Length: 84
Image (tube, rainbow, N blue to C red):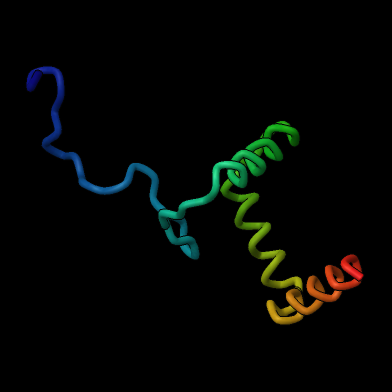
């Protein structure tokens, strides 16, 4: 095998460098969430599901969504209305 391959000038590390401004992480997502993002990319006839997840997170952060407290209050009001 040593005659076939010459690793004398090889370097350790990732094959593809992470671009500036990006950080490589490991994250655990529910299977159905990941499937949904992959399906969206497939329906769009291409793209990258990781880029789509990043865009969704950015939209959420920049979207000025209501606080958790406001969400809970809204949901409780809606449920109390339904129950009465």
